[in-house]
Image (cartoon, rainbow, N blue to C red; front, side, top):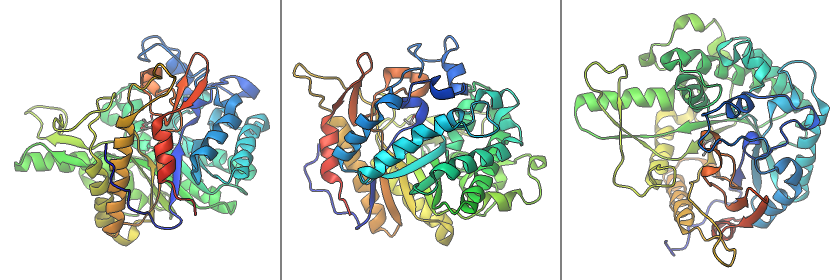
Length: 443
Ligand code: FCB
């Protein structure tokens, strides 16, 4: 672990932590909540590594005051959480279930009472099951449904929200959820999953307008990025890298920033109606960047259905998820975004950055996680270097506040600054919590 002092961040820099509803809330049927695609998926045999579900998760729904006290103790200026659509519209349409919104109302007030800015993601993958039953994100109509839902939430919380994030990682929801079937809703459409990209983007654009119409801003989207590391130096390797980059890093961001879809992806033009690209390019105030690791790429074998092949990145330490730890990848990504989009790029906030390790209490009950400290130290320095290089980065959120229910990995991957004993729900701040608190500079 490094003991070099952390360079200072600009005044007003937003320090935060992130979570999402299905991963922490539990209380799956409380106060009229409807089922989401993740309830269905987690309850299907064989889908989740340890056979668990998010039925209880961290029981944050009932313990939110304790969790906000942890945020206050951490000294962060912002908390990014997500709103469960099926709490607000149990069947995905119709008037708001006020009992569901009451929870977020209490949470927002609790945060503000502790001087923590609420930052809400409207869609972090937990689609109401009833909407999936009518086609989900494959059905164009869902974009309008999403905007209606955004309006209902803004009507209740818009007076106090400090930043809205429409969608979390639409690329991951498309690829893992609809392309490869390892996330809910478990569809395996491969490249036929592209309508999910277009309809998410359309929903995003309509939601931006709905929020602005309520006078509730600023607005962002949180994209997942994975910069390419070429594993070879041939022209074919470079072409493979460009193809992967277009898919993972540009498919969503190019149209959001007014450039239309990357041509090389050959999207089905029949999907895209007149005016759609203008809706999608509605100005955003912040670009949310979720970064975990780069991807090694080389040319595909002859006859492969894919235009690239994933190559292992061997020369790096790895997290418990087996993800390589490459802080420089974050610096390179931030610079690449600036170089690629220039003046069209809004200020960036790193909306997720973090790592899983097998942390547990020692004999004295303390949870020491030096690997996480080293990870965060490296990634914060990478952000600072990007700022020095002229990239406008205004915030950094650690994923995550709590150990939580990590999707298809269930409870087997611990990302928290705070350890959670899932049998007792006891929270124990790890050593990374104290370390991060020392980095945080309140305005
Ligand atoms: C991101 C997700 C988040 C969490 C982290 C580890 O892709 O947005 O919910 O699962 O990965």
